[in-house]
Amino acid sequence: MTPRRTFILLALVTLGAAVLAQSRARGDRHPAPPSPSGNIVVALCDGKTTAEIPGVKEGETPTLAQARDVADRLMTAWRQRNPVARWEDVPVRVAQAEQPGGATPGEAGGMPAGPPGDVQGGHTYGAFSERDQHIWAAETDKFVREGRRVFHDAKALGSTIAVSCDMCHPDGANTHPETYPKFQVQLGRVALLRDMINWCIQNPTRGKPLPEDDPRLKAIEAYILAQRKGTPLEYGKH
Image (cartoon, rainbow, N blue to C red; front, side, top):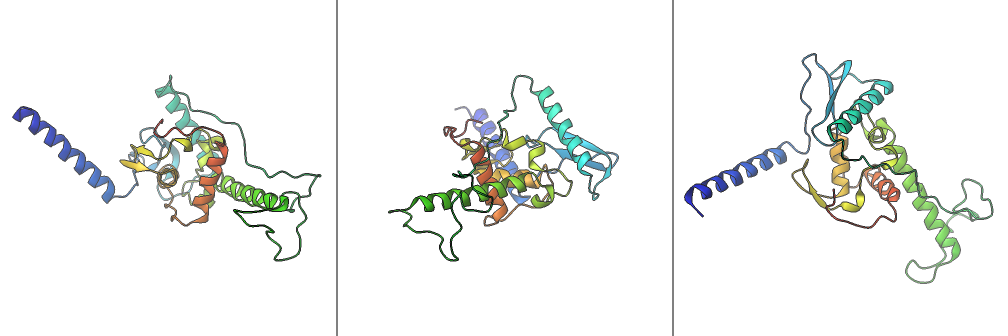
């Protein structure tokens, strides 16, 4: 390798390291470019597409209608910039526990509630009963439904601009949990699904990242995974 090429390579490596260091120093927060009018500017999760909320200044909270409008404009702009790409839509497929015999709401998977303390009759990795299976299914269903609730609720997410996850990802569309772990350009590092969830909470919704042990973060992750149930793993595809 010639001295000139070596110098260029070292310069690029140094520049890349500096950019990564700056990214890590400021965290995963990527502020959108400010508006000359002082209005709120919202950035899509691609880190490039932005849109302004007219008449709503930084520090103010948009209405739900204004949040819905800016999310729709962001998606329209993204589709115009990426005419060949397809923002993959998925049907509503929230995990649901079976309820044999026309069970009434509130019963564990269609099985009688039973006396207090009677939670599980068998051993998790050994013999277990049909009742156990229904309890597990009902608990999983409840957890996924909580994730769906938070995913669709800007306040529950901690959004400061009334934007919720579902405004750009209806029913968990185009989240591709089966592709994680992968190198995520927005973060400049290999990320897990929960890392990208937090990045989106910090940036498009302008909220605070959720701690690793926060039930909301776990529930959102469970909901997204449930929406892609049966999809083969393909790390790094997107």
